Image (tube, rainbow, N blue to C red; front, side, top):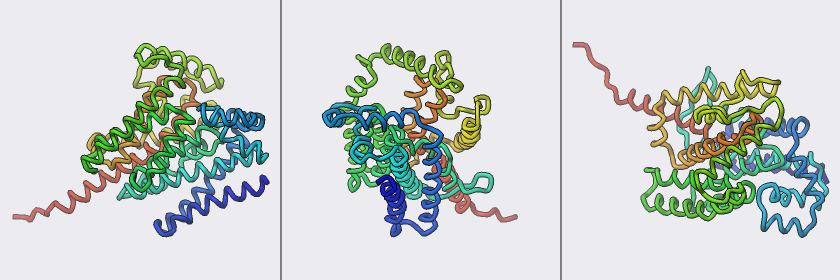
Length: 391
C-alpha cells in the first residue's frame, strides 16, 4: 500500500502540472516539473533529517479512537485537528510516516504551483539579479520548499495561503478556494485564518482596481469573518480578554517558552525593540547566528532576501504598494500582520524560519511586482521622452 500511495502522490503532482497545459506555455510547464522534482528532494531531506512534531502527529494518530477522531474533526483545532487529518492514512490505511511525508510534499508543491501561477498572472515584467531572471529563481529558494513538505501544520497553513490567494484572483468563480482556505486554516491555526481574512479584507478595501461595490462587499465579508473567527483565536491562544495588557502578557509568556527550546538556535527577544524583533522574524538567521550547515544555508538565503528588500525600498515602496493588484496587496498585508504578531512571541530561529514560510511567498511576489512596476515606469518614461534636437 505504501508504494502505491507514494506513486499516486508523485503522479498527482505531475497531473496537476499537466492540468494547466491549456493555460501555461510549455516553458512554464517545464519549470513547474523541475520545481516538483526539486521539491521532492526537500521532502526526502525532511523525512531523513527533520522530524519532531510531524512524527509525533503521525504516531499519535495511529492510536486515537474513532470517537476521538470525530471529536477532533468537529470540536478541536490545532494539533488535535492534525491528528484527525492523519487518522485515516496512518491508522485505517496503515501508511508509514515516509508515505505521509510524500503526501504532504505533493500538497506543498501544489501550493507553490498556485503561487507561481499568481506571480505569472500579476507580474508583467521580469527582472534580473546578477544576470539571473528573478522569476522563477525566487521559487527555488530552499526554505520555501523545506518547510512546505512537512507532515504537519506548516504545510497545511502554507497550502491555505496559496489557494486563498489563487481564489482572490477570480473571487466569484473561485469562491470554493477562499472558503476552503479559511476553513482549513481556521481548523489548523485559527489565528492564521484571522490574519488571512483581515489582510485580504484590507487589501480589497484599499484597492482602486476593483469597483467600489466589490471593495465594499468583500471588505465587509472578510471583516465579518474576522469577527466570527476572533473568539476562537482568543480561546486557542488562551487569552481571556482582548485587552492590550493581556496581549502583552501573552507575548511575554510565549517568548519565554519558545526561546527555551532547541538549544543553539534560541534567542532572547524580550529586550529587543520592535524594529529588531521584526528584522529577526524576517531576516534571521544571518551569518552571526550560524551554528551548523543548515543555518549557513539559511543565512545565505536571508542575506539575499535582505538585499532585495533594500532594493525594493529604493523603488518607492508606498507607491508600488498602492499600484499593486488586490491579491498582492492582500499578501503583503497578510505578511505584515503575521510578522507583527509572531515577531513578538518567537524566540527560536528554527521556529521562526518555519513560521515565516507561510508568509514568504507574499514577500517574494511583492519583490517581483516592485521590480516589474519600476521597470514599467522606466519603459513608459523612455517611450514618452522625445529627443532634444540641437539648435
